[in-house]
Length: 326
Image (cartoon, rainbow, N blue to C red):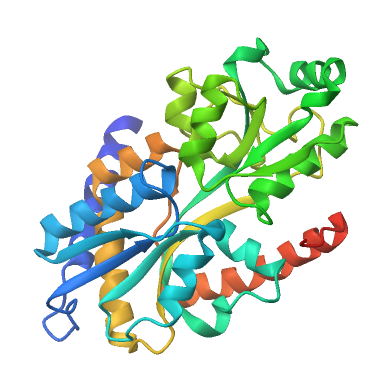
């Protein structure tokens, strides 16, 4: 009986969501012409794969001409600066992880302020930060990796997909908690880091779960721990840092779409509505979960409040670590 009720509830909920996703006759549509989606990381990384997945479904849903532009470098901040100076007519958005904003917190010279220069379309989903090791090490758990580092102190470094972000800080925090000093090595996104982990050119790496999960399954790297509050839905076999004894390590990142801050609210709402409908599509949702994202599409105003809260908390963590950009 319980399963029947659950099924009916799911169908009813899906129907309601579908109805809610339909554009009201009076609502603003997406702009006509070419729509640009900026991604601040290389093709093939987690951010790129998810952004293209959403863009493809949006093209099918709306008929819009959406072009992906990979503006790589500086932990996604090059794309962010281009977005800030982009046209505020709804024709350009940026798909970005929270790592880019966290990196901005450590560098006062960055030419954008996310709270002043961008308008969010709402939360897309949350993601955990993952710590992975090269399969060439022959270790299977984080404690085993710590013992390996103690035997090989000359290789006590890890790659980070975004220097000055939580893919940097989580690695440092894990090392500190385990009593080993781990030095970050910056990479221009996940794809080159994955290649070096697979080839044994670096012993460990830290990035978004979305960047690593498929490569973990394919044996190119081995995720040994995440920084989430609970095991990831897509990877229940991977323990959290809290589970293995590091109670203070808990960081949950997220993904959102930003537009330039001057973009009119009706156009922001149009993007938000279409993105939410795409992310709620069962095929897209299942694929995002497989990639390591927990889809949670939400309203722009609600997410803006969360973003403000998270930025304040992350600044406290950065100050506690004592990180100073070079």
